[in-house]
Image (cartoon, rainbow over all chains, first blue to last red; front, side, top):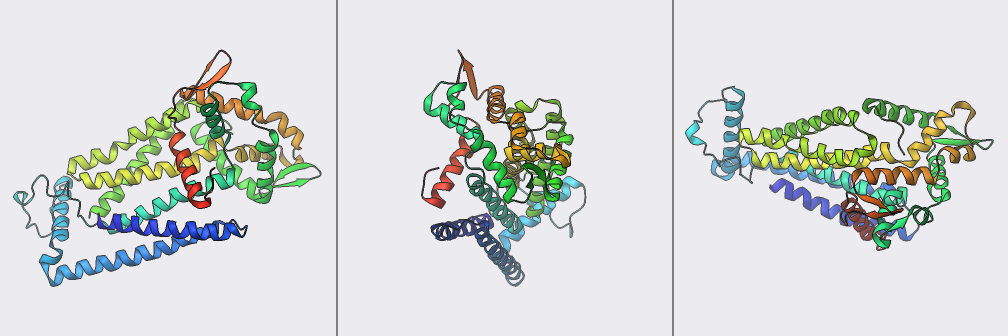
Length: 217
Length: 166
């Protein structure tokens, strides 16, 4: 639990710093994903603190068993339970079923999970980056726009709904993005796919074949 | 030890999710994808607890379930969402299909335009029961839709980052 809380704290600190950095650059008209590198720094800090704490815990247990006893005891009980499930006898074999009560591990919240803490941090950053990049890369998606319009106006006919959209906003802007990203190029008023775009389409085709789906969009 | 249990349990859950995903979504229509994604998440979401309950690792199972939820969220938003509904990807596919001769904007708009985009999305919402169509008009079925939470998250994050409403 300690490691999860620690990584949550590092994540919150990094997010606040990221907001500050984003605003600093945005004021100067610079929008870049490179600001997200602050989270790499957070990951390094997380790994450093986690490793230090794990080492300190294991050293204090060796020097003074009662100091790290709770964590180590949990590990012993856990190993005993896994051994019992898998049918493999535990190392040492000095722990008997009478040592393990029904609630000794299952509901224990102070079990040491250092690596899970780091994974927790990485997953939180992943989700934040997705939510952070969505509006800046795709403006507002037409699906979100439809739902917002229906929420605001109640009932709407197709004609009224479609009045809020245009080919310029839905198609042309995205074609410009594809061009800027180097996925397509324009030659004599005709759009063609670059080798990079080619690779992306082939990957997507493979994915679609896996599910037996037709073209999306 | 608990770390290994959590990591292995999460990997098992996400593998179950993908296996069910391939089997079930192959047999179902694309425009019913919303409701099947929720069912899939719930179905595979049981696996961390099934394994944990047997061994009595409730806390580990709970952490595994959180990790599993994060992974499903990342997959749905960053991969599935892009593959299934991205306009950019569809445009890229149209241009790719045209081959070395290429395709003009006019030709693209004949095949793929705002009407195609809107009809596809409205059909998807109707199949998922998010909206209804009555007397020639569309309306929301519930105030709370599958988009509500992600939309709220995007709006809040945008407000935090820019200080402006999205």
